[in-house]
Amino acid sequence: MSEKGDLKEIHVQQVISGQTQQPISLEDFRLFLLNKEHTVQNLEFHIWLMEYRKKFEALPKHEKVKSPLPKDTASASSINLPLEELLIKAGEETKDPTVFSPVNDILYKTTPGQPLRAEIDSALQTFFYPNSFKELNIESWRSRYVLYNACYTTHPDVFLDAHEYIYDYLNRVSLRHFLHHAVQNVRYSAVIFFYLLSIFLAFQSPLLLYTTYSLHAPRIFRWPIIVISFLSALLFASGRSGLCSIRAVLGNRMIPHYELAEYRKCKSGQLTKNKFFRRSRQVEVEDQVERKNWKRVLDPCVRRYNYEVAAHIMMFTFGFCGICTALAIGISNEYDPETMAKMMEAMKSAAASAGSIATPK
Image (cartoon, rainbow, N blue to C red; front, side, top):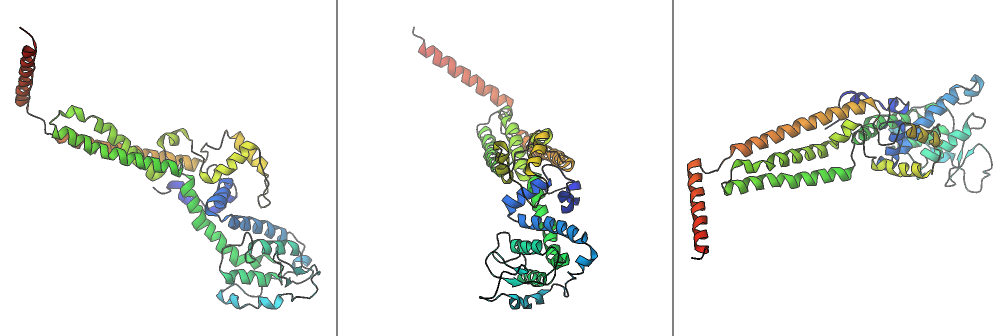
């Protein structure tokens, strides 16, 4: 079952701007990217660039003119940009503050006297330099374009093409993956358990039907098939959707794996700050405590989705159970009443004869 209703309309900017709540809040999204998809650098780059653009726009005009727009736009041909010409050769003086010095000691010449140069260089080291800890997963020509042009200007449009690519990926891929996992209220281990138990129960119904059929037993003995088919269908539908109907109605969830580490840190008081998220993690955790706990489903869109899926699960369950019940009742191999009466008389006579033989004279 896929996202329905309002969830399809959610845009990544709504999540980033704080318009969504647990389990699809910005903090949930960050933890998903950090621990599940391992692309949290995309979100951090977007948030940093938005902050940087505000800083640049707030500069006086005489400062902004020092960093003009890039001369060319990014394209596949950017791979041929002469970035190597800006390298500082071994033995050259490297104490100039206008020299960009990445963590692996490869140095680039930059234009002196430009505003926000230190912040730009730090961002390049973090997101664009090869083999950096948070290197963005983008084509090499996009990265080369940024590295080359950022040596000449600190204008935020240097990052325009790379940002458009990253932002589109966040909205089109990462957000969809996140919503798929976030709307589920049970973990993967529970889903596997649901499937295994459902398959086990599914084999019990035909076994019971075959046993009662082959023994010509009355159909009243087939009543367990109703319960078995109901539970089997319920568990299968719950596993298929990743949703427990009871939790959906109560508005609860199992804390997903990608949040468990952070949840344990919260419980133990081990809190840190993330420079790309302006709110303190302490404040974030206090918000979590105020809303009772991390297991609550607070976002109205997710709650509506849970109710809708729970209703579909029950409809499927009752429908499947009804079909199984009809088959169990409709298939008959019972003896007719007259034959059954004769068999009962014969059994009574045999019992009486056995009793008379066993009684001593």
